[in-house]
Image 1: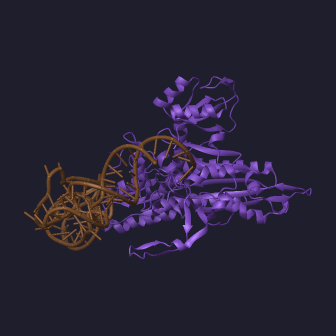
Image 2: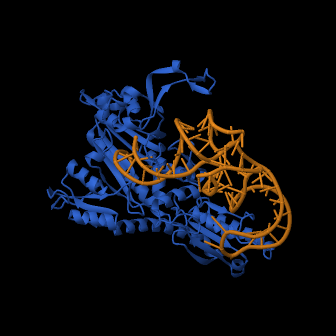
Image 3: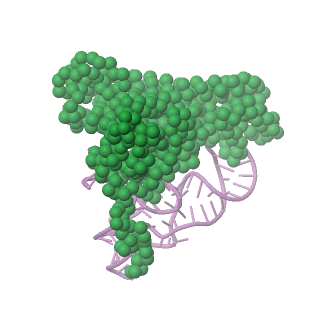
Length: 493
RNA sequence: CGGGGUGUAGCGCAGCCCGGUUAGCGCACCUGCUUUGGGAGCAGGGGGCCGCAGGUUCGAAUCCUGCCACCCCGACCA
């Protein structure tokens, strides 16, 4: 156990994660199976993610809208692959009324209130949206449609984990409609890049981007592009996906448009999403045995200031307050600053508490510092602290926030590179996976049989065929058949 | 869905085998005093349908039956 009562990462990574999420006040289990309560501190981080992404979507021409939570059951079955992918994890609404139990046992579902057609709670919204788009699109002049929605969805997962896989989760889902195949592919790839930039520059996770193999594809997609992050246990986490849907949903919902030439053609589609799962990635990528480590660009609090006041220095509190006030003003509104002068809690408690919460920078000020005209400034990521002259503090902190943000990305990149191995034989593949873990680049013959076999034998899956993957002659690590490129394998969440 | 586990105060647990005082401990909470440079100390105090429903018994947190819920590990998934 670490000094905060959290299981250490080396002891039990999975337990560490669960305890940290709860102790840091991000989320907790609710009364409903598999569904979490996102607590204010956790939601504040999610809101920061949302506002950054929302602005990026709007910059790239998208608008927000809202579609129903409930979807007629028949809609789901219109696209064959889609129903295969989602049917077994759908929550179904069958009735619309409750009534008092005539036997006096509380309240029961009124059998007379059975729905003609059951409704499912959306596991994703392609079907309801394409059923709507069909009415919106007649001509090429109605295209493109570039819509995003922020929503919650339900997938009845067998096993759940806070943020990483919950029965209900929050996300955004973009659904776009295009005139041409090329335009839809450009959109799909543009969003992939937008996601990857966000993950690198905000979450600080140096993701690998690429395209999924056929068996890992989104149900109903022609191609699924992905961003794969590496967690501190070497496992991969799919952090966001962007799908080129081809004309599959247009076909399923009979959504055609008149072309510039007067013909009739099916609409081309994309969909893309990132979810509260990114919260899990944020925790698992950077945090340590003392608690969260948050990247400044997403932290609800950037700087916490803890005053050290004892009986002898009580009369100097106003002087202290003035220094802190000046510092806060100097930092400006963009730096979220918290002055915690609650005298009910001692400094040591606060230090531990804000470390647990991952606040990037802590400033301590006490009589000793005031005598020397300095502040003690501690950075969360490296757990170091320095005494900085009060007059230099604003500049120091502003630079440090940038440095911490960069450092997290750099650490993530280094960690990934250190835990990435090229392997050429299956024995080596198994050995590396067993002993070192992480990402493996290996030749694959491109068949689903080989992919399945490797998964069965090692639990590693193909995470993606990386973007701009160099072509290279080789033989499949499992089958020995010829291959033209290495693909990314890893155990995944 | 298979395997394992747990339901006792807001949280974490003990008690259960072997039935019998007023159900106990730690944290948190309230009051007071002393404290405050890495999770403060002392004193006092409040808080329980012992998961639910039956049964056995003079007597059930404890034994029996059934149910429900949640967690963890696997197979599936953002």
